[in-house]
Amino acid sequence: MQPTKLPLFRTLVLGVTLTLALSGCVIHVGGNHHSDDYTGSVSKVFGGIDIDDHRTVSDLSTVNGGIELGDHVNAGSISTVNGGVSIGEHGNVASIDVVNGDVESNDHLSVSHDITTVNGDIELSRHANIGGSLITVNGDMDASDITIGGNVETVNGDIRFTGHCQIDGDITFKRPNKGNTSDTPSLHLDEHVMLTGNIILERDVNLTIPDRLKSRILWQNSHQ
Image 1 (cartoon, rainbow, N blue to C red):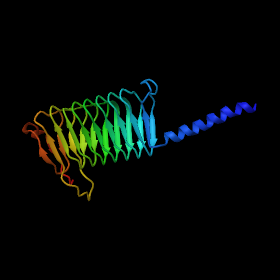
Image 2 (image 1 turned 30 degrees about the horizontal axis):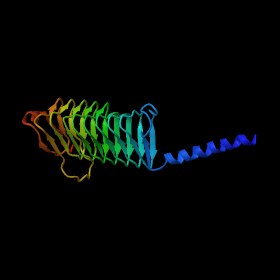
Image 3 (image 1 turned 30 degrees about the vertical axis):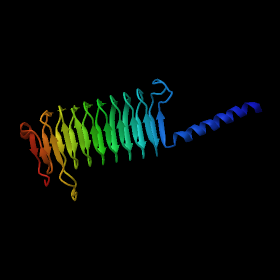
């Protein structure tokens, strides 16, 4: 029976080695693997996640690490704390939720639901399609030729939409907490931005918007 124990011992050592490798700096999905080799979820603490081009994976989450997707990547929900999210061209994800980090994408991003950040900016290149809402607390938004199926909401961030944009919901600047001394945020909408909803202001905002959208402004006193 003694000879059979050696392979088992080696297997156990290999398993421990693999576990330690996954707890290192970065989990990399790609390389020599085919797209159908791994399509599950990836979770990481104290390190980032890097997904190669043309991969399909499920949910991705990190704590103290960023998430980077290559071009033509399909993914489920993406969430990170203390790390940013970067997505290549033609990315397709379910949702993005970030605390203390920015969200950036190249052209033709598609998100089925919301993009939400706390203490982070949202910067999307041309032709993004967001099925849900864009939400920040202390972060700016910048996008061109974007389509948004839901609302746009911030507290202390600047919002800038350029090119031919379609926003199906409202744009809201939420009332800040008492004692908040942040600078006055700004809203910039190009002439070709189409807004189905209203511009709801619960605080002072510097506005640069087309004349045709000024009738959509609903002022709600921040001292109420």
